[in-house]
Amino acid sequence: MSNAVETVGLTKRYGSTVAVEELNLTVPAGEVYGFLGPNGAGKTTTLRMLLGLVRPTSGSVRLFCRAPGAGCLDGIGALIEGPAFYPYLSGRDYLRVFADHARVSRSRVGEVLHTVGLTERSADRYGTYSLGMKQRLGLAAALLKRPGLLVLDEPTNGLDPAGIADMRVTIQKLAATGCTVLLSSHLLSEVEQICDRVGVIARGRLVAETPVALLRSGGSLRIVAGPADRARAYLMALVPGVDVRFDGSVYDLDVSPGLAAGINAGLVGAGVSVSELRWREPDLEQIFFELTGGDSGVG
Image 1 (cartoon, one colour):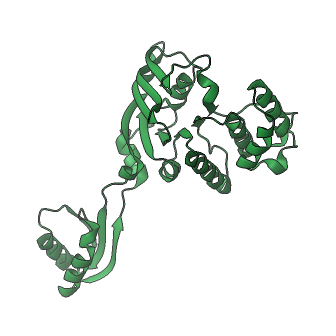
Image 2 (cartoon, one colour; image 1 turned 120 degrees about the vertical axis):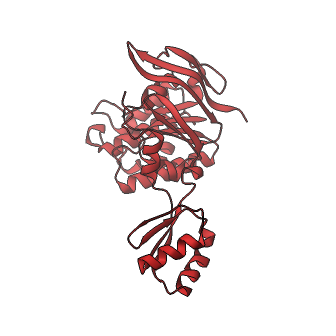
Image 3 (tube, helix red, strand yellow; image 1 turned 90 degrees about the horizontal axis):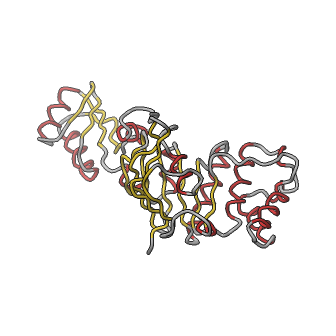
């Protein structure tokens, strides 16, 4: 299967400021790829270079093995930053204009309005739309051409919890049809729920690229037990060589979750009272700070 997106050494400088540096990004066709990073890390600049809206200082871009340019974007839909339309036309009228410009049948207008949940408000003027509705109209415009690659920059911006859930379902449905989705976000929970793989960018550099499932690899077993001295002595003897971190009667052990039942039985048998025992997955926010070096990512 070919790659939908490939960049090699992609770099963008504005004078002495490096916005994106030596970015090597690969998004296989059919994948939902999360481009994760703090605000100002270089996500939007990267997406603009992918679409030919910004000229790279150096490096190359390939979309389905072609460089951005005339004809390359025919099968690509994009929503970069926020959509901007004149306020006096209705959502449906705007999509009709876009369909004519893209040489797409106007029959697609009703389909994409239904996809993004705007059918009932399609006759209303754009100026009356909420921020979330404007975002959904922008997505509808991006879907008119039945894109093989959909590029979304912060697609849940301005959406309420219900809107975020709807957007998630929409993206998953598009992916199920074989559409490749590349979305940027600074929300770890959003990326975790809908993406197959994630690339993390900080200060313009790709600092990690991994399947989403591996983001939360690792973890620890948390135990709350007492008397504290007896519990600590037993745990140290039971799992020698394992890191046992404790604060009073709270213990965190870097062991497999499969050992939980045996540890619990051993503590109880040793006369230790166990009030809590649970597996703790790594905190996504902490993972993010570790990957980005603990800063905002702004150069």
